[in-house]
Length: 66
Image 1 (cartoon, rainbow, N blue to C red):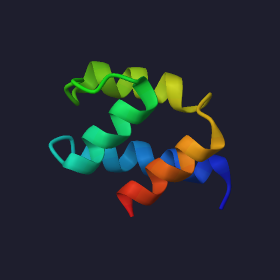
Image 2: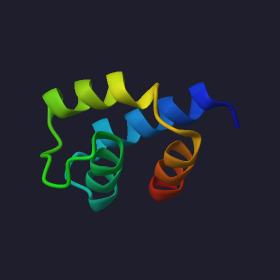
Image 3: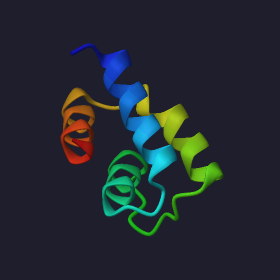
Image 4: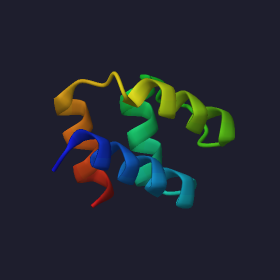
């Protein structure tokens, strides 16, 4: 699977399921902030940061949401 598609699916999931444990895990893994609330501001930060995420972090996040 290509990186763009993974990123797009991860973002889409987090936007749809803000309250889920999976979204919380994705946000904390990518932003490094364990206590981050999943809201519009956090999602914007996620969108900006995830493009530079390491491949293993991306794969882990993709696995979390699937």
